[in-house]
Image 1 (cartoon, rainbow over the protein chains, first blue to last red):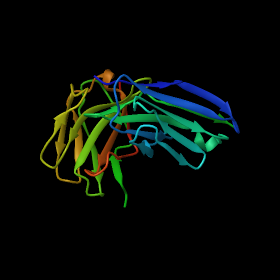
Image 2 (tube, rainbow over the protein chains, first blue to last red; image 1 turned 60 degrees about the vertical axis):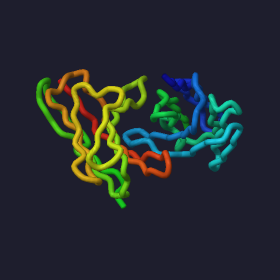
Image 3 (spheres, chains in turn purple, green; image 1 turned 90 degrees about the vertical axis):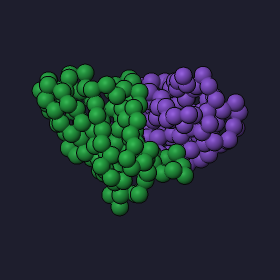
Length: 108
Length: 112
């Protein structure tokens, strides 16, 4: 059974700081998606990565997919209060599997 | 487009009561899902429907039933609510061509 682990579980930083959160699996991903969930809302897709070594940028967010397709990272540059939320990684191996999420709080 | 809509947004039940959570999508998606989200446990799949007329169990189906009423609507029923079913419930739909899931705003259920 494929499991997804995310770290850290909680992160509280000051506005303007940089941060990186991680998603790891015991198995190879076929594809990996990152979602952000704001308080009181459902998750919203940020990006999908498919190819090992792939790097995608979305404004101040940089997503990397490991060469072996067993890990991924999300780096946020100059975090802003609007980045506050729960960041979820989701794998679609033979079924959809969710990581437990990283809860990010950016303090003004 | 409204995307995925869910009703109600909040609900409080007493143990043993029943209720149905409603979900509808207007994106013409074939697949629809019901998840529950609990602190520290992420999203767990309760049931899913790959197409109209079909439903399958997910990771945590016990205590729940579903109905795929038509292509747009997918309902989740709790026949006899238990405190362990206190959670936030999300409905989602997805397109067959991509793995992208579109989520509703959630139903916050408390069972006393």
